[in-house]
Image (cartoon, rainbow, N blue to C red; front, side, top):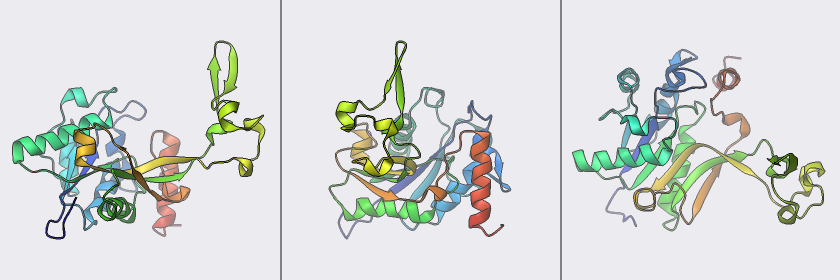
Length: 246
């Protein structure tokens, strides 16, 4: 629990490995004249809550770009945490452990800030932090938006048969895939952009969630997670609109 005498240490971590398969070197590809990872760094730099902002990367080139836009690069990420199977928890726990071991600096809250979310705003970052500052029972918080496709309309394959992804027994609907969304008994949301998590939840429990997850809703037009060429085009269009280019 934080006291009024102790300002919490809040660590922002931008994770940008160099081995993207979908789009080579996606994290430094130019978007409206700036490397992709620069957008989230600049948004985070404007937050009054973030004590330190680091770029976790396995690439010297990426590290130099990160420093250019204001991120610290105290280490290069080990290769075992930069491959296709490495998880967010892997590189985040590595970053925290490295800072604690080599600099004797310990964060109270850690922010996962993906470079593939160029539309992420400082306001969203602040909102996630404020949930943890104002609710001492909260173990984490994250930004969410309404899911583009409700799980009730999704399918799975078992053998040679197509079955509802959510069984009818769980949805309570005889034909969930053919039911209008207004009759669904629960709204579905997708995570985008920011995750804020307490140190013990991350380092001891090895979780990015925990027992009480708070949330900050954002509009669909403020959320793009870049994974494809189409995503790049969409992000460019939305950013141009936000910045008054169109």
